[in-house]
Length: 419
Ligand code: UDP
Image (cartoon, rainbow, N blue to C red):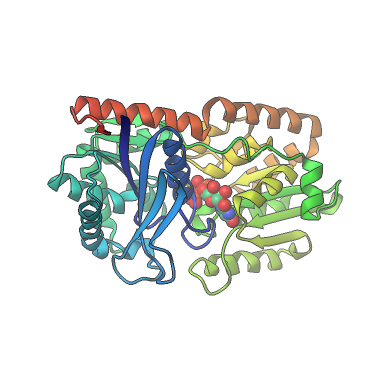
């Protein structure tokens, strides 16, 4: 007799099986994939549903015996920006129901990711018994406060986010700051649990700085400052570039500024990359600035280990995986004092926090860390410890496992027992 715990993770626009760092693929894709694999290792049968965004993509990708990505056809089989996906969601629901029917599965738990998927989850909940868990990854109410070009879909998104908070069986906030935003900006109703994101502490932190530099062809004694992430204006890459142009080090020492991530010109994130490269040229920083493009996690571990400081200058960040990846690698972080970064980065202990968009404050913080090698080491050690204690995927999966089982128990929907 085997206890079979079936779960569907729904991530309509964030395909857990594709390359991370290009176009809109970022933290959500990593989260879903890592949570899926960690749950599978705990005995869950995990199906991760996403939208097929390219006709050449496989419809099913097996990651491990109990964990697979399933790509459903909903709308054109091409990249569609997330703000334009809503109209294809009814097809996505139909396809997911068909999949359940064809495979004789009815997921007792569905964990949705981002507001688009929450709509899918809520529609399914209308027609089948299911415990609905949701992670926002980004809140419209926060985002629209910080941008001027509000998209046409904004009102729909705000409404869906509010209904989801008030009706889902549980919302997973990834930081106390995210929970506070939900309560103050979305609704006081609804059930929220805080379960952070995690990182792979066996991968990040597994190489020494000297080995990493050798591998990347970086000089042993250079000072290395890095950014990694999507090319999106709200990531604040401009703040980092302007901060580096104010830093005292470019004239004093051999310095390297690495700005990793982004796809090739012509893709949707190319506009921001072109804009950043132009600023780098205008400020005369081309000589010491590197743009390695999209980097996979296996290679990223070398970048984090080689860096003396990792900068996360986002205007807003619900959690911010890059900060904990750098910390796991023993690299101090200089980050904006916003959202989840206030939770992960401990000011003066594992790195430094600065007001978002403040080039001068970022320059000062980066210079402080670069000028004190001994303190840098201490910050890095404390950073690693903090990740080991609070932010591993294993720990996250344990907490999610407990949450799902308690929801199933409350709803008296026992997990299926198969012979
Ligand atoms: N990432 C990557 N390669 C790249 C750029 C980014 O693997 O070239 C990964 C990065 O390591 C992290 C994720 O994308 O795991 C970004 O997550 P984060 O939460 O920092 O930002 P988001 O993309 O969710 O805004």
